[in-house]
Image (cartoon, rainbow, N blue to C red; front, side):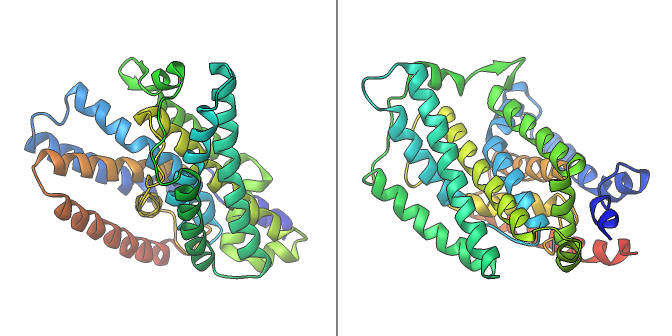
Length: 328
């Protein structure tokens, strides 16, 4: 039983490639449609805009992938982003320290705040067996209120020059923040595919009781998944600060919805146990390309929200039938 649980998913195979090819085809189709509809879509400047726009959502979605793979969900990541950003903003604007020290303090404060929030979500939901939907909904309100309290409902700015410059660095036209997000995707892929922790994340989503009977501490892995999600929220907060050069207690509103959408559109099952972080990457691209293309076509924000919501519903329906088709 132990061997079956640990070795289960995620080997690259022709079957898996074909099964997930629809995500890539959908992205190519969207790209082709918007390329024909707008002459500005495939310009270098617009491609850079798309990469910049999807960065924060991609970071959040990577963490969300871990939680959804275990059959959970985290509705608090947007508020945790704001809270972690405010705490990091307070740290980076302390007086009497050099720029290097302030940046290091901000990174530790942002990541630490995110991890603590994630740990609380995981411990409370896993220890008492409570629905993560409810627990993280509570954390959504707690983190948002804490962000407003710590910042005194004000925006924090005037960061060190080196930190502000980092958010605008380009490498061959690609934003360095996006490259950081890609590196995170690669790390998450390695963790999910080549570590016992990652394999048991899939195992818990597929059959939690089997993992428990095999002698594994399910609580540890569930809490770990939520802690990773919290850490990603903290990292996204730092990326947000570096990109916009501000830290706002009202940042991140509804960011959790885009993150969940990217994961689900990318093929990760809401029931857990099935999906991949590269699918999440494709899902984030689809959401980013869709939003950017609709803006270029002149659609209102209301219409864009409606269309994005429709895409999410279609993705869930497709996931339902794909689960039935691929079940063996």
